Amino acid sequence: MWQDMAKFGKKLVDHGLVESHFGNISIRIGNKMLITRTGFPLDEINENSVVEVDIDKPSSFDIIASSESLVHRAIYKNTSALAIIHAHSPFAVIESLLADGTKIIPIDSEGQYFLHEIPIVKGGIGTPELARNTSDALKDHKGAVVLGHGTFAAGKILEEAYVITTQIEHSCKLKYYCDLTRR
Image (cartoon, rainbow, N blue to C red; front, side, top):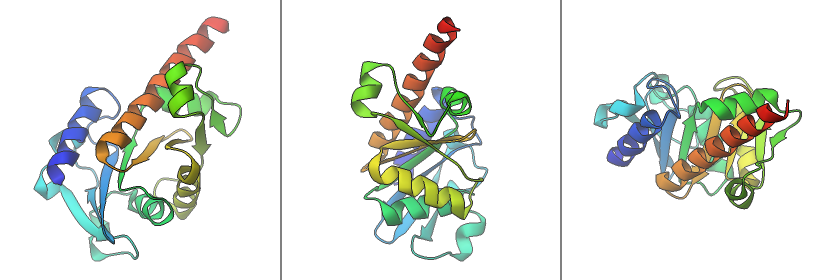
């Protein structure tokens, strides 16, 4: 399992969707999740950089798990997700700060088709508020952007969460450049 996480962690860094030490990845296995450790570079994931924690309750390993473990738990409890990627995609963050409301509407055909809209959620890093708001948004959407922070994408497998992450960033990048020409 950690090998899949390593594959997508490297892709996230290589494609500029995260800086090496930021963002996190998890996979659900029954009532547990494998999640990247806090502060560990996503392009260097190995068996020692992933920790297994309970989904239903806090665990003693939470101290070394990602600071967003609470958010991942809430998403797994409230959606059918089996894999989650949290990235700090630059154009998604920019668009969340520029948006006039609670969502970003893609202007490209793929974004419109696959995402329809991208909810913008609020809450501090790793807080119950962020966990609640993100899991609520992902009940009806494939991905969301945390205001000024980054994306959360959920899927049945990591590849699906990765594709959603890249689509959000692509749509936000195109929207940013198109809006720039209109100013």
